[in-house]
Structure formats: structure tokens, C-alpha cells
Image 1 (tube, each protein chain N blue to C red):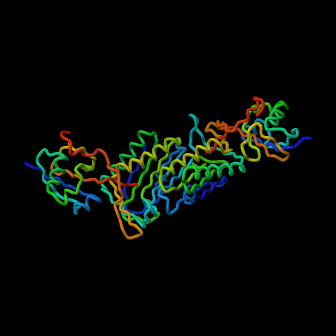
Image 2: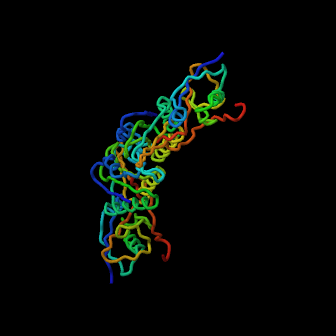
Image 3: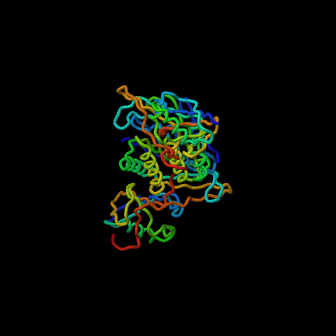
Length: 152
Length: 152
Length: 83
Length: 83
């Protein structure tokens, strides 16, 4: 089992992420690429800023990749997430998986991207065509802190 | 909706298949790559020959891509299948999909590769390390011909 | 009256039959089923073909009842293994 | 006795609080919950933070009952939106 996880500031080359996986025993490879698109909930978008709690994000990304590899029988996973200012069409995240059979590759790829959305301490600020900007509504990661409840 | 489908004899460059999809409205792209692996049901494999009913395979591949695009709300799909003698690690098939959101991309990608396995008139002959070779057991495409039954 | 169709054999079926294509004469109005019965009736090597192979007529999968016309391209499709 | 933790605020929380990091003194044995209550008790702008934010202690998500030690890095994590 080999996994690679990184949070980077420079542009991501999806092909080089894909090149990190693959093995003579693997018959299937899957590359997911997330890119900045030109619209969000009906508003025209002209760019996006990704902020991260970088030290933690790198750890969480590695944990997600390791979980996917262990649980789903894939032997190779590479995931890279970018932070900073991104233009339309630029890659924000790339997830590459290879495995002997395709079912495991799809399951692991999907697991990684879904867990990223749930847990990775990354936030994005959309810049709109009309000049406005806003933080994208996110997902509260668990465990949450039940402040109002008594005891533990 | 733009789809691309081809059956080719020359090596496939997966990156160039991925480059055929993508659109300013699309936030997700997914590339599936099938490669020749070094084992099959416990036997060491040293290569593979892909035969095809080429004229029909090109049509079926296009039909599969169009079905996926129509049914699954993806706007761009490109699929290329190779035929001929392939060495270990070479790409036999590449499927690229892009769509505004990732769920559609995963669904369409999976649809295309599963339908290829069910319907594409392609056959593979494994060359084993021990010198033997055999046609890979395949899947009977439907509709089948119920010869023994009477009437239609 | 009869009509002539062009039959194609691929992969394992080509190996079984020992040919990749062959012209076959069938009766006017014959169906896919009739063609398969006619061929298997010739004995070896055609008897090695299954009784109910997958068939494509003019590059589209066809049921057993599909009628044939002169000049049709009728392919015997072994279980497929693409990908 | 008290201990000092380093609190971090990201994204929308940084905007709300007007700072990205701050040292906070809490009582010996204080938990994550105690820290949030202490901060919100200072009034604006800390009252803008939710009562039950997601929190990471030393880069791991932590429950409200997690005890704090001097030198801990306690991050207030707004709803995440990576990918």
C-alpha cells in the first residue's frame, strides 16, 4: 500500500498525480480532477480563493488516503489539494487511485473526495463576476462540540 | 452535449483523452484508465491481444457514450478503446467525463465502462508467462438468440 | 428464391469455425434463427457454434426472429471481453 | 493555576473575530467547552462565534469535553468547503 497526500500552493498537474499510482498488478486507474467552474448557485464566478489550516489539512488528507487504501483494497492512492488564488478552469484537487480491479478504484476515489468535502479544513471564497465575494457555505466537520449540553 | 468515441490501433495517451472533455461550467472531471495487468486468475500474464469487430465496436462505443451523456446529465464524454497487441502496463481503454458536479461524472464514467464490458464487440487473448494463451472468458451480450424456442 | 448473407466469425468463434467470414445462402424470408440452424446443420465445424449465439445484423445486436435480406452482414459474436 | 493555549481562527471565523490567532488563558483542567464559553463571555466580537463550533486540538478534531494543556493549538474550524 502506497499513499501520497499533499497540500500545495503551485498549480496541480493532474497527469503527474496520476503518474504517482499504477503498479504491474493494477488493471484500473482512476483520476478525479476538481476544477474551478464559472458558476455557483446561479451566480457567475470569476475565481476562487482556497484557504486552509495547512498543517492539519496535510494530516487529514493523508489520513483519508490511508483509510481508503486500507478499507477498500486499493494499493495506490495519491491526492493533492491546492490552496491560494485559483482562476477559472484551474485544478483545485486531484485524486488518483489504482487497483487490480475497477470496483475498488471507483469506491476509493469516491471515498477520498467525499471525505475531503466532509473533513478537510479548507475553505473557499468565491469571487463573483459582479464584484462581490463570499465564503462558500460548507459542511460542519464532526465531532461537533455540544457546548450547551452538560457533562461530556 | 459533446461525445467522442473511437477504436484505435495506436497507443492511447490518457491525458489527451482527458483533454477532450472539460468546459467552463464543469467542476469535475474523471478519467478511467484500463491497463494490461500482469496476472489473471492466478496466472502470470505477459501480454494481451485485443480483437474487435471494429466497425460495430466504434458504433457501440458511440452509442454508450451518448446514452451516458443523455441519461446522466453529463455534458462531455470521450472514450477510446485500443485493439491489437498490448504489452503489460499499456492502456486498453480510457474514459473521460466532465460535468458540473461530481456525482454525474462518477455515474457516467461507471456506466460507460460497465456497458463496454457488457456490449462492446471486443475480445481479448491472454498470453501467459508459461507460453500458453487463451481467450478471456467474456460476457454474452444481449439480446441473445433463443434458437431452441419456437416462434419469436 | 434464396438470398445470400455475409457471415462473420470473431475470436473464439473464428477459431472454432476456422474462417473469419463466409457467404451463406438462406431461403427468402429466413430469420437469424434459420441461418444458425442451417449452418449447424452442416455438421463440423459449425456444430461447435452454440445453438443460441449472440448475433449482430448489420452491426446491431439482433434477436433470433430478425428477418434477413440479401447482402446483410451477420456477425457471430462470442461472449465479449472489452475494457 | 492557569494554562495558556494558542487559538486559531480561519476563514469566516477569522473575519468574524478580526484576528487569525490569539493566546487565551484558561483555568487548569479546562476543556474545549470551557474555552469556548470563556471566549464568548468576553462579548463582541467573540459572541459572533457559534456556541458549538467544530474545534481541532493540536490538528485533530476534538470533542467539547477534551481537556486542554498549556501550549495546545486550538483551532476554530468553520464549516469546511474543500474539493
